[in-house]
Image (cartoon, rainbow, N blue to C red; front, side):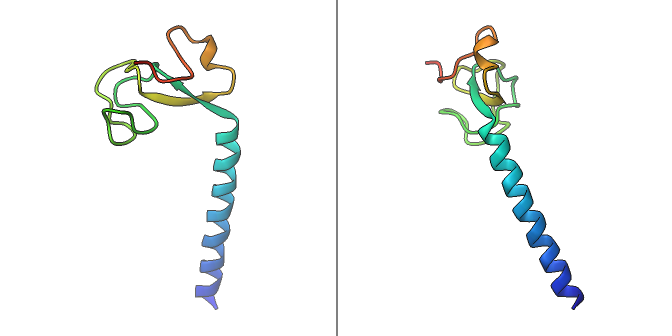
Length: 82
């Protein structure tokens, strides 16, 4: 009985986290060319995963920002820079 309760609680927590992540992603946009070294959110053409960039403002590195914010940041772009 205790195991079933723990399993049900874990499943409920996972479902609520997935829903929160989906809602958050829908309210954000990828913003390229503004992340600090090691602070990118996902892979780039030259890096395999999040947090692996080696230079500030790497043109193809991105982070999530609230929708409408990226266009207001100097040097930022909604598309990767080449």
